[in-house]
Structures are given as C-alpha cells and as structure tokens.
Image (cartoon, rainbow, N blue to C red):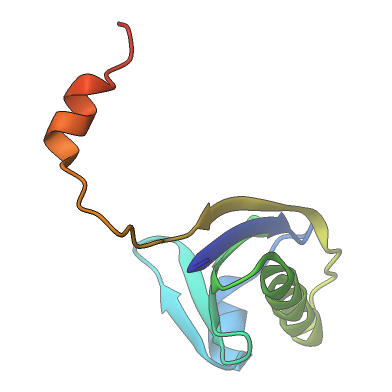
Length: 116
C-alpha cells in the first residue's frame, strides 16, 4: 500500500487565517480557500477547509491514516477550536504491485471492454 486517503469533519467553523498565523507546518492556500498542514510521523498532509472538513493523504496503512487524522484534529483543538472528531472515513487506498510478465495495456483494454 502506497497511499491511504481519509476524510473527516471537526464539526466547527475554522478560521484559516488564525491557523496560518499560529499553527506549525502550515501553508495557507488562499486561492483554493484552504490550508495544508503537514506531519512527520506518520508522514502525511492534511487539506483543511474553513467549513471544518479535513482530507488527509500520504499514510501507508489504514491505522496510520486514522492516527494522523486524530493528530490533525488535536492540533486544531490546541489552537483553540471546539473540535469534535466526526464522520471519519477512508476514501481511497492506492497499492502497487509488479508482475513477473509484461502487460500490453492497449490489447488488454480492447479484449476486456465492457458492454456499452
């Protein structure tokens, strides 16, 4: 597993400017209306919106994703927001593998085309 993406809500409005000024490892992306916050362990990045929605990417397991999500919520709580960790869900899991043979993608997709 290379990447686990999860999302959750903190059930309160977040002042992004305050988080950008007082938070650590934070980058304010004003054009997107969100903040990115990073952690070292587990190495993850959170996209935080003012509505209280948070998306966490970069974890290498479901357990690490949940731990990272709870840590991001805790960081927001320590900044003075009334955070309630809520509506947690794993959104996407990306894994890779190597096959002992080549795959011809064009011919594979032509043979296994779904009925339209």
